Image 1 (cartoon, rainbow, N blue to C red):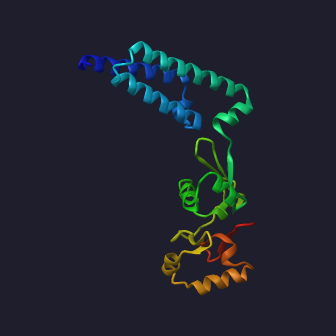
Image 2 (tube, one colour):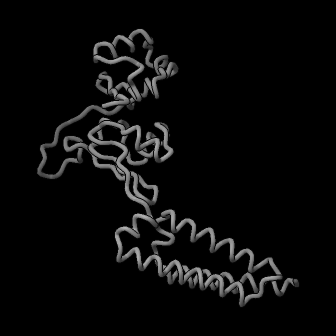
Image 3 (cartoon, rainbow, N blue to C red):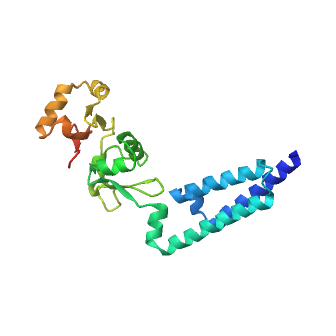
Amino acid sequence: MTYGDILFRTATSFVALLVLTRLLGKKQVGQLTFFNYVTGITFGSTAAEIIVNRQITMLQGLSSLILWSLMAFLLALIALRSVKAREILDGQPTILIKQGKILENALAKQHLNIDDLSMMLRNKNVFSPEEIEFAILEPDGQLSVLKKTELLPATKRDVQAASEPVRNIPIELIVDRKIVEKNLGKLELSSAWLLQQLKKAGTSIEQVFYAELQLDGTLYIDKYRD
């Protein structure tokens, strides 16, 4: 295969991908669901084969891309008209936190751990599960968060009041029945103190999935069985 052939195949594949992706719509590049992910990978793989594999003619390669695009468009059309098809192709939203309580089973089904969840919450400017009414994992992998009513941003009709600057963030002390010793050390607290606080709350470390110290000094506790 000459350099001219490679350049021609590359340019043709680029134009074909650009046109076909544009025809499939913004959802293909904007919301990466399972179906969109598979489609995108196949597009890229097919285009690469067209460019470097001399055993595949340009007509064969373009035919493959066009056929795949038609199939993707047809399935998207079916999903547009059928709720069941949308559930199969894109999946369903999953509630991960409900009324400040972490749903451990839902978290496990999505192959997420508490660190993954904490990172996703911080990306939403939320630093504690206790602040949340609902946290929902969308089919495209994004987390939607609804804060509790009393924590929603104030409107112009609300009374404005001075507040102290935040000097720290809630810090995790227990994750999956295990005490986070380094965080206790930072706070100059002991394991004995933590166990005593759990006892006061009527629970034990064996029952705790997640616990963190709040800004006001209170302990937020999420049990395995809430």
